[in-house]
Amino acid sequence: MHEFSAKPFTVTQSDDYRQWEETRWRIVNTETGEVVDDAQGYGYKTAPKAYAAFGYKQKPKRKKPLKLAKTVQAWANKHSDFSEDLSDLIFQALKAGNSGQTIGQLIMDAYTKYVATLPAAEQPKFSAADFRRHWTT
Image (cartoon, rainbow, N blue to C red; front, side):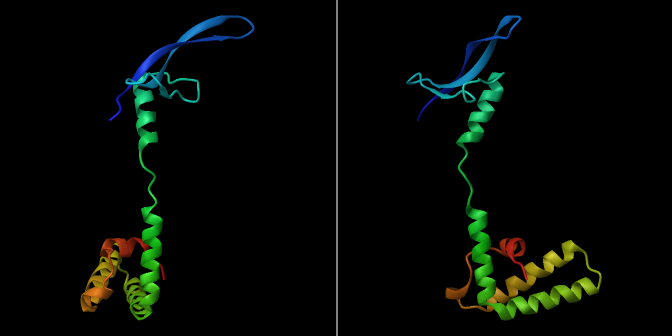
């Protein structure tokens, strides 16, 4: 595993009237000495900001929610009878003046009960919370 550390360097800047030096920070691979992040050549003003930016850039990209939303919608389209019943249940709950939290719980309960009636091969791989979050009528 590679080790990285923030190293200071001096930047000389000038304008028409004066010239000054400023200490900036960049992330360096300690094994090879290679600069791996230097804010596109400008450097970071502090070492903690250099570490924070480098850590943020190292986080993997998350594409799962979009894929999960498509999976939930495909499952709901396949089980349109359940989706229609659920839409009616939500409509009745709204007419009765139930809160959003109560309706969310109704959706999760209805989903759980419906999934329990399905054969194991047809049961979805996502949770009731995922269904509530990504299902649209």
